[in-house]
Amino acid sequence: MTAQMFFIGFFGLAGVWFGIVVFRTYSMVRSALALLFSQTALGAMFLSMQAEFLGVLQIMMMATEMSIMAIFMVMFMMDPGGLGTMDMTHQKRLSLITGFVSFVAAVAVAVFVDWGPVATTFPDAAQQTVDLGLELLNRSMLIFEMAGVTILTAMIAATAVAIQPLKRGKEK
Amino acid sequence: MTTLLIVLLLLVGAYFVAVLEAWISRGRFQLAAPLLAGIALLGRESIVPRKPDRIFFEVGPILLLLSALLAAAVIPLTPNLIIADLATGALFVNAALVYVLVALLMAGWGPDGAYAMIGGWRFLGQLIAYAMLIVMPITAVAMRAESLLSTQIVISQADLWNIVYQPLGFILFFVASMALAFLPPFDMMIAKGELAGGVEAEYTGVRLAVFRLGRLVLIVTLAAATVIFYLGGWQGPWLPPWAWSAIKILAVTVAMLLAGRYMPRIREAHLLSWCWILGIPLALTNILIVGVLVLEFP
Amino acid sequence: MSPELIIALISGAALFGVGIYGALSQTNLVMIMMGVELILAGAMVNLVAFWRYLHPDNPAGQMFVLIIMTVMAIEMAVGFGVAIARFRAKGSVEMEEATELKG
Image (cartoon, rainbow over all chains, first blue to last red; front, side, top):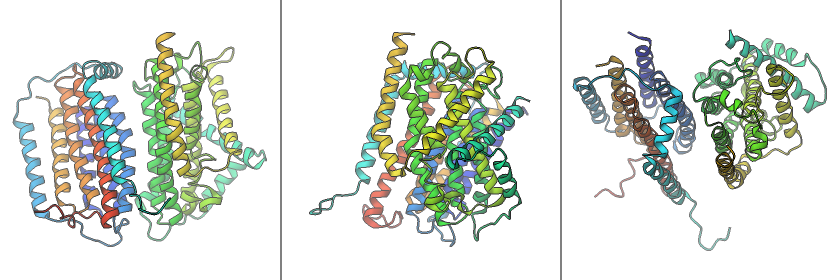
């Protein structure tokens, strides 16, 4: 039992626990912030796996994303504070079974596959960042550009869908 | 040991910020006033509102203080006085400071009060305005240093400070960090005359003391971040490094507080349109200019 | 075979399972999106674990994580766009009521 093993297990457990809390609480803001802490725990897990850049990036990105999620929850829910205990689920048994089966299947694959030799050496954090930057702007540049263009498309599409439709005959 | 020293220095800095803020806004220089106010707050009754979201109510102020302290962990005050010289330091400052938003959302939602909640959501609107203006200038700074290490960023400014090398980035970062620290004129979420104290409205006693302390530490942290990104950190002639750090941080803090004194409050909707229509193109221009400069005059 | 790798993979699998449960069982569009985020997070954990323990010398593994973060952001943007449009048109984003496309 090494320290690294402990931290990976601890943050993994925290991530999964907050992930469960997301669907168990009635308060919508709590639900969104539980998702945030789940993602932050995963960021800490990346840090304990020595993927420093990814860990910090995850912690940074998710805070903004999930806070925005929280305000959308408040906007679109009938009972954002969770004062009444309204049931907001359907096909509960089916979902439970499907979720559990997929979990077991994924665990079975993880345990029974021979993953081959485990790498012992790995680049240090500064070297990782350099490598990742070179990878992004060198070999994988096209994919990276594609991601950028896709985000642009998504931004335009989302704005176009969400924008207030113009009222005919009524000047602004 | 280093950790303790830096936390202590931050607290001293926060105290000076409190004195300065009172001096600038009320025109009276009273060295003991924040101490007395703090003691008075500690002695006062801590009122818990009816039906609070208890977890958020308690965690909000503490998270605010914690995120400001965490961001300070990667800021070097002298070449050796730094808690953790992370390989992703410049990014980490940002990552820790995003949790200021989370703290304010929690503190706003927790007490179950209308003014506090509106204050919290206002800060979300403000974040969407300033977030890009924090990240993009830092990108340009890291481009010049060719590293995300905060010590490396300071060393890269040995010949020429970044404020001269990329003045555009400095202005944007300065304004954005004022918005991040919800200093006036961007203090719509805690303004006394606007929302009856906004996020602070429902807090009393010890919790309010922690909240205010967190805000002061946040201001010091942001001033220190501005110093290491744009004003050459500890570098300077004649004086020892720690003195230069202290002088520069003090100067930036005074500049931040003074700048807000003479401006009308800006609504977050207006801030959003200004930042996205004017600020982000300027930030991208800044990245382009710095890129050309770095390639042409290495 | 490294125990760290297995622990990380099991965490990823558990997140995936929770995400599937959430995406299937919730009736609200925003909650369904939360489930999808958890599924993607599970995938991300697996990718980081594979990169760290099997191929640390190849940064392409880290790049995939960045791509997944992009996918998460896109999913949020488009999902909220759809949610706003639907809320404006129908006054709610309950997916039980969204039966227009049902055959």
